[in-house]
Amino acid sequence: MQREYRPAPLAQGSFDKKPFSNILVYLLQKKLTGSFEVQSKDATVVVYFRDGMPGKVCTTATGNELGHVLLEMGLITEPQLKACQSEMAKGGGYQGQILIRQGAIDAATMVRGLRTQMMHKLVDVFAMEGASFAFYDRVNLLVGEGPEEVFPIDPYPVLMAGVRRHGAKLPIDSVLETLDGSWLSFSSIDALKRLRLTAKEKDVCRPILSKPRTFAELANTPSLDATALRAVLYVTLITRELSLSENGPDVGTPSIPPTPRTRLDSAPPGPSAPQSYSPEIAALRESVLAKASALANQNYYQMLDLPLGAPSDEVRKAFFKLAKTYHPDRATGELADLKETFDYVFSNLSEAHGTLVDPDAREEYGSVISEGIKRTSVMPASTDEEVRETLEAENLFQKALVLMRRNQNDKALELVDQARQINPEEGEYMAVWCKLQMLQRGQDVPLDDIIQHLRRAEELNPKSERVHLYLAQTLLKAERPGEARAHFEKVVEVNPHNVEAARELRLMEMRKFKEKEEKKGFMKKLFG
Image (cartoon, rainbow, N blue to C red):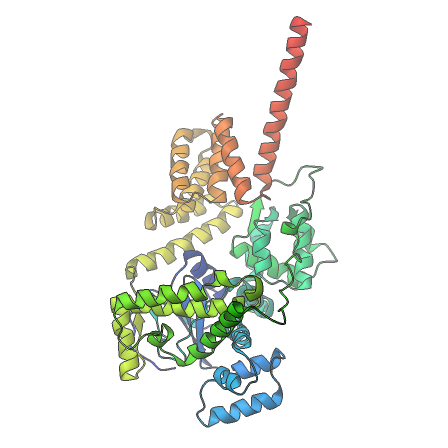
């Protein structure tokens, strides 16, 4: 990869202090767009992220060529790969396009291969021990580097595969130490499905789905694979899909019914392609496959069927016209088997549109295709200082949560104070600060002030399980059970497996029933 001019990075460090797994999670949660560059003594890797999802990867390391990936997937044969390599050596273009021209694959198969190829390249980053990294906010370092195509993929399966394969290089044990004494439950069955778990990893999840468990209980279950257990708990903890509670389930708490929403293996089978299609469907299938085949050899203007230098208003019109045809929502029924292909086409149309309607990015991109040189595409940016501070605040907050689980509340409060000073508009920071104030000051804490702060935290983050739980607990302590109940119910809406909220709601129902019975008994004595 070429070494082009670029602005100063907004965040940098090394994998020794900040592993790639945590960085993937942070970029996704903050939905950041930009380039993530990793350098080790053996290789350089650049990943372009769009809204927190990896969309393009370039690496100096050998291996993971598309042809080899397709061969491993059983989608092409050895002779087909050799024929492709022979044509490529003569300057025949990119492997995907060559294989399509040779009739070895179609565009849908190429898209499957590209997705798997990107997964392989990203998983290899987990193995880059001691590597240094830098993140360039709202900057695309890969403009003009290979095909222009961008194909964002879900980081969850990447994360799980990376931890599964290279877990020995990650600080899993030190992270899992924070689980001691806590009851564990999952926030979402859908999140588990996104991880694409192996059979052994699904076996780990099932006991936790049935009812909350402790780490010690799970670790001492002979039927559960220890490596799979560590990997699943590590990934779900750092993605905040694992909920921790100080209290265990009540005796007799029923298991979660095995409905389709709670079965790990309940994904519906893929659609079977019919032998024939209506003329309209057949034409659309042919159109999206042709569009996908052509993208790697097109610049952004060509992707939108526009002449070079077309004005912004024409770019918008062209994009919305094409979006009506190639939007992923159209991939239903007889088109469902082409869902990935529609995603691939629409992602590239969106990237082309976003670049060409922004004056700065458009000017930079124009230099790339007119001068034929590697340039950096810079998109509308937040300030450098703002992004640096956001990264710093989140790092402090994560450290505070670890200290809080270890009951080191003084140190945790110091870190949360620092995080709040950097980013006072983050609701979760404010909620944890309130919780720590209550733990530290006990009866001396002014509940009305804490409630006011938690109300503000709710405004900032209305869907936070943590915010609603802490607010409900504080309202209950302030003897305002009606308001507390409403927030316990919101906790359960966000995470149906939250043990503390479920218990409080159950106790409230029991008290209500008892009061009703006592009232009936009093009336009977009075008038009976």
